[in-house]
Length: 109
Length: 112
Image 1 (cartoon, rainbow over the protein chains, first blue to last red):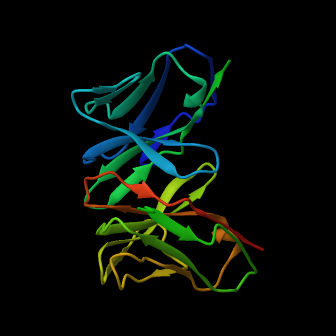
Image 2 (cartoon, one colour):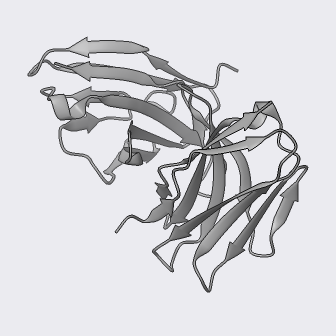
């Protein structure tokens, strides 16, 4: 079983739509969680960390449910520039970062 | 700051050849890691280092060697390339275990 699982998509949404991605992790000892964004043929870049109480950064909201071991990312008012692959990441221990395979989002004009 | 740099950007090898992928960072980060990214598999950790002179294996270390003689550099060596090592390789660094990880632009390797 993979450490982190995501729906690969693709999600095709119109501009202005709200879209949500979910991710589950298998190791209950995972300590930290992140969402990374990866553009086509580019390196991943940190979008936001995910905190237990949930956190928001502009149009992006991340939530963590430790009991169910899932993480979510909500994007409101989607922009064309949001088109990318979103990677869910869980950290276990000192250096074990486990990446999901990513969810591809395409925002359509 | 240049951040994390990787060379080469692209490489084609024949089975059995060896080569070194270079990685350097100018942010004085202690932690450095090598990942490979394959379709449907996500990023997988190959080797990592928590400081100069200290390296350890990740999830998929077989067929790769690393060394960390300086804080800045963390080369990845392919000992005898195999087609299964065709992948995109990313080097990454961060200040400590809890901080944001910065990735290099990647090396696309094809082994024929």
